[in-house]
Length: 164
Image (cartoon, rainbow, N blue to C red; front, top):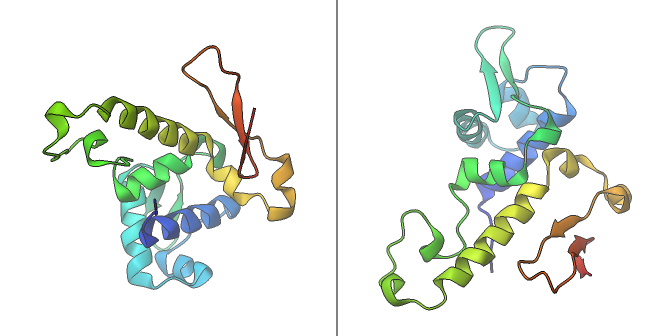
């Protein structure tokens, strides 16, 4: 099973909250209260998101955190990468691979293709898409998968089902 860590989940929740409240700067304290996550955890996540350039932070009485770009321009892949590091489904597709089988593995290329497909799917989902209420999901653009083989038609993922 593939699963993001809790910090990444909290990061997406925080970024979604900030995307809904763009008119204000938000302190770590107000964000922690708003999303009901402990303050030390919120501070840790905000630091990662700021370091990755996804948030702007300003010091002072009127300072706080805000998105560095519009929610349409921030992908879920960027948020995940900011907190988890590069998206890598297996050891062999990571930048810091320590797999003993790597030198003679016959399927490493295929894992790279799969990893790239997952990354591109996550990159297609924008922070603004995360703000859509469940009743409106039919209005959200489906994620498009472009096959490498030209004999196969375009596939889309819409409401969790692969079509095409």
